[in-house]
Length: 439
Image 1 (tube, rainbow, N blue to C red):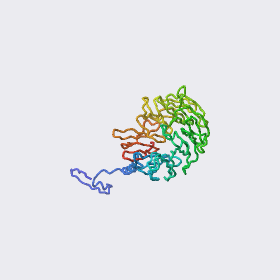
Image 2 (image 1 turned 90 degrees about the horizontal axis):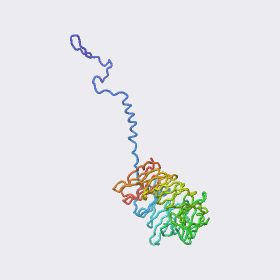
Image 3 (image 1 turned 45 degrees about the vertical axis):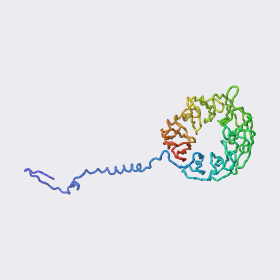
């Protein structure tokens, strides 16, 4: 401590450290930090560390598996979550959940169609050296073991596990719809014929619902317009009736709303008639207008044509709604996928409510991905001039699709199931990606 006397002399008085002066005062430095600062910094670090150490979000399209395939190698996705693909002469079953191989087996001939039914993989192929016509081979879906072989085309009808061996008529009506000679029910274990229904000339084959919980039945419409309903368990003929002359083909007649709907001409013009599949009696008839197709729209039936889409009540044929700008609809889960424009182009319109026809999500400019998406739809569109494709998820009520990612240039022939997208690439591979369906 310094003090000045009366005569101007400066006197220095040493008070010493015993008076309570901190040691740091003897050599002044930086200002000491307040006592609350250190705990506050620790608290901030505790809060930031979990965020800094958290894993980054997964990619919108995460590759699950990649399979080398040829341009003509078929593939299919089953209801139990398997990918079945012919890969360079080998048939392989993959688990779509994690991409692991379930089983694989050699293919004795190039396969051009893969179907499933009765717990079997049904392979349609041409066997070199045996015959020129294709044959159907059955493999177990569980382990890929060979079960049996038949020369016929083997198919199922909606709502029934019964395997039917048919000889398809080669015409514009498409395979499996117009048949000839005989229809045989196939034992899925042995491949032997359980029962047979002769077809004198040709007939159109269609699965129709049975009463209550009895399961599906088989409807045959013969060339003389005689219709017969058969039990799929025994093959027994249950009821017969007469149907009018019509252009019977792949999409006529159809089953919708529990009835058989048939487009046919009359002296007064083209009409749509509904028939009870249990009795083959006509329930109602209404004008067809310009309709060239009939499809299910939820609880309603939709008549599609160049003048628009009309939804009618299958109970009495009463029109419920009409959309002149649409040209077609497809049922996907609980919603409709509407296509068409007033100019006539078959473009994607959007997702619609089947009960009212109200547009729920606008999808102009997008293309739907074939397959099932559950409560949503995968859509694609061109992403530029370099061949890239953008993929997105659309769900009812969304203002616009949620963009996922760009697919590699040259990607195509895509199919989807909930949470998975499978596409061929320009490099000769089949790639399966995982994607987050919603959120």
